[in-house]
Image (cartoon, rainbow, N blue to C red; front, side):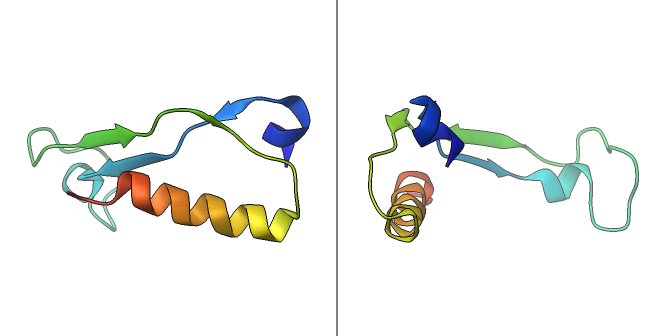
Length: 69
């Protein structure tokens, strides 16, 4: 993983509401059709270890960080 090799910190990000701005099949933005919100987590450093285990842990972390509350 590039972030682990470089020591870069990573964030999980979630974007909701884009279906109101660019619905499926539409090629241009539609103003005022609904709110778009962005949520992101605190940055973390990826630990050393097995890449598959880390990927699974990162997925679980991202889901926990970004799930609607």
